[in-house]
Every structure is written in structure tokens, then in C-alpha cells.
Image (cartoon, rainbow, N blue to C red; front, side):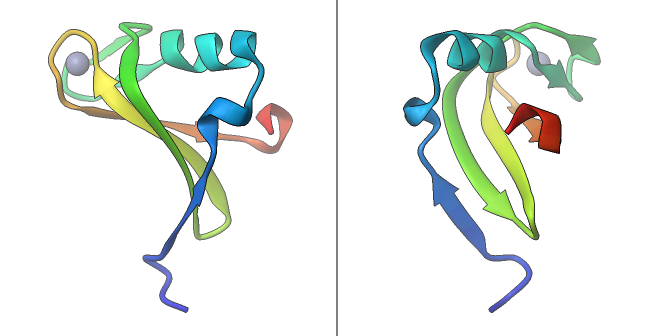
Length: 72
Ligand SMILES: [Zn+2]
């Protein structure tokens, strides 16, 4: 198995409130600003870490949220 491999997860299986929190609590590297929000969320696991990837609501660049164990 390649370390690059992504294992897709179902973001929409999460609670509505949890989904909402992920969509709102973002960090955009491009805007250098937090909590701009994301759209088109996609959840996956890569190298043992879970990410939620989406599109920044302000600039349209990809944003990533890395989940710690506490969030899972
Ligand atoms: Zn942005």
C-alpha cells in the first residue's frame, strides 16, 4: 500500500452539528484566515490521519482540516 493512498470516509455520516462545525471551523492557507468556511467537503484518511478537505468559501482554494483523535 502506498503512503499516498487515501481511504475515503463518509463525511455525511457525521452528526449534522459536527458537519456544520467542520464546515465553519477552517483555516485557509491562501487567505491566511480562520473560519472562512468551506464547501464541497470530502473526508478521507491518509497515513493514519483523517482529513476533511473542502473549498474555501472566500477564495475557492482547497482547505484542509486535520482531525485529532479527540475529534473522531
Ligand atoms: Zn481562502
